[in-house]
Image (cartoon, rainbow, N blue to C red):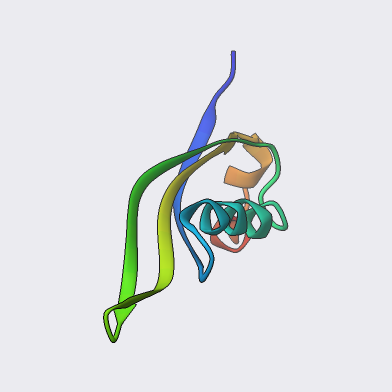
Length: 79
Protein backbone atom coordinates (compact mmCIF):
# COMPACT_ATOMS: atom_id res chain seq x y z
CA UNK A 1 0.00 0.00 0.00
CA UNK A 2 1.25 3.48 -0.83
CA UNK A 3 0.12 6.74 0.71
CA UNK A 4 1.03 10.15 -0.67
CA UNK A 5 0.93 13.74 0.56
CA UNK A 6 -0.06 16.55 -1.83
CA UNK A 7 1.20 20.12 -1.43
CA UNK A 8 0.53 23.04 -3.73
CA UNK A 9 3.60 25.03 -4.80
CA UNK A 10 3.88 28.02 -7.16
CA UNK A 11 6.90 28.48 -9.41
CA UNK A 12 7.93 31.34 -11.69
CA UNK A 13 10.16 31.84 -14.71
CA UNK A 14 10.95 34.57 -17.18
CA UNK A 15 11.36 31.90 -19.91
CA UNK A 16 8.27 29.65 -20.01
CA UNK A 17 5.62 27.75 -18.06
CA UNK A 18 7.67 24.59 -18.56
CA UNK A 19 10.69 26.23 -16.97
CA UNK A 20 8.53 27.48 -14.09
CA UNK A 21 7.40 23.88 -13.45
CA UNK A 22 11.03 22.73 -13.55
CA UNK A 23 11.90 25.38 -10.95
CA UNK A 24 9.20 24.04 -8.62
CA UNK A 25 10.56 20.50 -8.86
CA UNK A 26 14.19 21.62 -8.59
CA UNK A 27 13.51 23.65 -5.47
CA UNK A 28 11.10 21.19 -3.85
CA UNK A 29 13.49 18.24 -4.16
CA UNK A 30 15.95 20.06 -1.91
CA UNK A 31 13.64 19.59 1.10
CA UNK A 32 10.99 17.04 0.10
CA UNK A 33 11.93 13.39 -0.36
CA UNK A 34 10.29 10.91 -2.74
CA UNK A 35 8.44 13.36 -5.01
CA UNK A 36 6.42 11.27 -7.46
CA UNK A 37 4.08 13.57 -9.39
CA UNK A 38 3.80 17.23 -10.29
CA UNK A 39 0.36 18.19 -11.61
CA UNK A 40 -0.06 21.63 -13.17
CA UNK A 41 -3.35 23.00 -11.83
CA UNK A 42 -3.05 26.61 -12.99
CA UNK A 43 -0.94 28.71 -15.34
CA UNK A 44 -0.85 32.46 -15.61
CA UNK A 45 1.46 35.30 -16.58
CA UNK A 46 2.32 38.73 -15.28
CA UNK A 47 2.25 41.50 -17.85
CA UNK A 48 4.04 44.85 -17.90
CA UNK A 49 3.70 47.40 -20.70
CA UNK A 50 1.81 44.89 -22.83
CA UNK A 51 4.51 42.20 -22.60
CA UNK A 52 4.69 38.95 -20.67
CA UNK A 53 7.38 39.29 -18.01
CA UNK A 54 6.77 36.26 -15.79
CA UNK A 55 5.27 32.81 -16.34
CA UNK A 56 3.73 31.22 -13.26
CA UNK A 57 2.54 27.68 -12.62
CA UNK A 58 0.75 26.21 -9.65
CA UNK A 59 1.66 22.55 -9.13
CA UNK A 60 0.17 19.93 -6.89
CA UNK A 61 3.32 18.08 -5.85
CA UNK A 62 2.77 14.52 -4.59
CA UNK A 63 5.33 12.76 -2.45
CA UNK A 64 5.47 9.53 -0.51
CA UNK A 65 4.10 9.62 3.03
CA UNK A 66 6.65 8.86 5.77
CA UNK A 67 5.22 8.23 9.25
CA UNK A 68 8.19 9.78 11.05
CA UNK A 69 7.46 13.15 9.40
CA UNK A 70 4.00 13.23 10.94
CA UNK A 71 5.40 12.40 14.37
CA UNK A 72 7.55 15.54 14.37
CA UNK A 73 6.41 18.86 15.80
CA UNK A 74 8.32 20.80 13.10
CA UNK A 75 6.51 19.17 10.13
CA UNK A 76 5.91 22.48 8.36
CA UNK A 77 9.68 23.04 8.17
CA UNK A 78 10.16 19.77 6.27
CA UNK A 79 7.70 20.32 3.43
